[in-house]
Image (cartoon, rainbow, N blue to C red; front, side):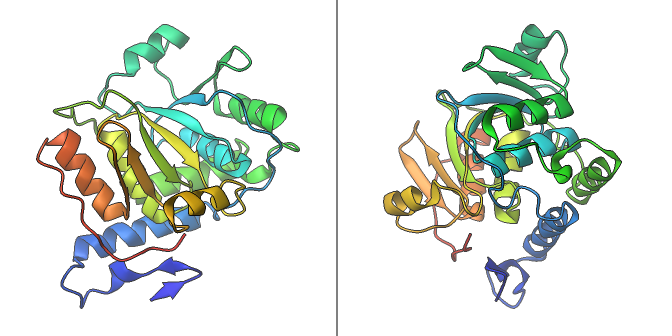
Length: 264
């Protein structure tokens, strides 16, 4: 089953490989996207890309961090995400040294030698530096966007608690994704809870990078995780979450497996 190009396999409870938890997780992830009106689903005001990847200290279900990630997705700009989940983690002290506080989101743009906090300031800066025009209202900090972003966080259970992984990757992982995808969301949450750094290759609809992605990986489907530490790359959110748990959180032998495609 599909609606608007999104596979509804997690709702097919008659299948032996689909559980009630799968269905619940999918429904809340879709509801979070709908609550934000699809913000971050497509590239809308991109102008140019930075030469060096931006760095963003953020928390996946922080309503303020979400607005910045949505802006990056609509600008088609990639960023190295350094997750700062509730309960500390390895990047909190780094953030404190940079900003004098532990408040997220916090952006570092080494292209312009700029570091800044504050959602509204970051979104305005990104739009001015890399956008064709000012950020649309849905990405600006106001009572409506904060209300819907907080509601999206609540639907996903609020902030995930930090789980110290048994092993840390030496190099950041690479996640090809886009903000509004419910399948990408669950992978980002897994990375966030373990505070595993990753380069977010934003691949929203209308992204100029999608054609190159399809040539390289054979299909236009997200999320896709590439781990330069192990040489493993894989599609499918369920497989990716299992891989992260087995390889870094619990340190079992990683056994990637195939599940059905979820078209982007």
